[in-house]
Image (tube, rainbow, N blue to C red; front, top):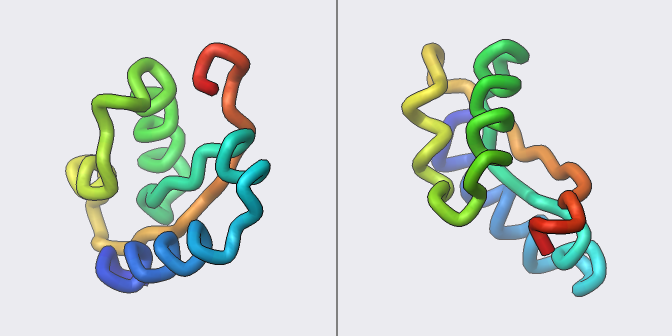
Length: 77
């Protein structure tokens, strides 16, 4: 999906998510390509507070994105 679609999907996911899910998981937009996504997530995890939804765009080479969620580390909560 394009960035605009991914942003809308993320907003809907967050709106429908249970509070405990929001506290335990990161929900982010990443590039669809596996290698680009892995690099973005690696950098994101170093400093989550310094990233926003648009941050993923500088990692993406083809304008295809997805919304992913993964468990927060203890020190991310």
